[in-house]
Each structure stands twice: as C-alpha cells, then as structure tokens.
Image (cartoon, rainbow, N blue to C red; front, side):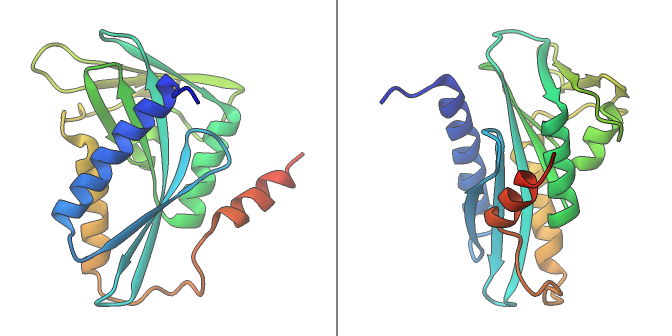
Length: 190
C-alpha cells in the first residue's frame, strides 16, 4: 500500500502534537478519532486526577508548495464541519502544513477573522512568511490582526488543554461527542 503525501503530512503533524502533549501534559491521556472528511480529527483528552474529559476538533490543511505563500482551499463542507466541531466540542483548531517550512495553527476565533460565518462554496486562506519572521494569514474575508508565531503549533492546542484541565470542575456533559454522532448528523444533511 502506497503512502500518500497527505498521509505523511498528517502523520507528521499528529506525531508532533502527541509528542508535545506527552512532554507538556504527561499525566493526561490523549486519543484520536477521525472525522467525516479526510482532514478532520477529534482529539480527546482525559485527566484521571479530576476525571475530566475534554474534546476538540482538528482540521489539517496541506500545501505541498515549497515556498511562501501557501494557499489552502476551504470548501463549504470543510467550514461546516469545523463549525460543527466548535459547537459540539467547544473548540476547533486549524492546522496548516506549510510545505517543508513548518506548521501554523489557529483556533476557531482566528479562522473566523479570515473566513466569516457565511460559508461560500469555496473560499481560501493564504499563509506567508519571510525568513526568520512569523506567519502572516489572509483569507477570503479578511486578515489575521496578529502574525502567528512559528511555534503556534502545537503550542496553541497545548495551552488550550492546560487552561481547560486547570479548571478542575468536572465536565457537565453526560457523554463525549463521538465519531458516530458526527457521521449520523452529516449523513442526514441534504
């Protein structure tokens, strides 16, 4: 079985994420589920000390272009899935694989600065970086006010889990969101 460039890029991003989660949050347990599209994942975190579960959506975009700027297409169904993750999980992160340059990452709020709540059939996000500078992000509907630091990935995801796990109130959800929920909801769509 051949390994596609997309699988290699997703594997590199997820390996880096799990490596850093293990180093920065060693007492927590993490698992991964796939979403309904090839780019979507659910990251599940569990704190055994407080019996707290946290779940976030991940959406990985890949550009094979070697140099800046890197452009990413967002189809309506991609944005709908990301919005669904945000609604069901509380947060959704977009991870950008910028060729061989590195990774950039932003939360849902950052994505909404460049792609608004009106999801057209196809929109775009562009990421650029000059040597030794941070990533600049533009999109169909605007640009990110602040540049993304080169260590935005996986730092922004780790900081989110740190904040959520440090809030020691047990989860109020009776069950965690699962892939079956996502598949059943998306399969009922027209």
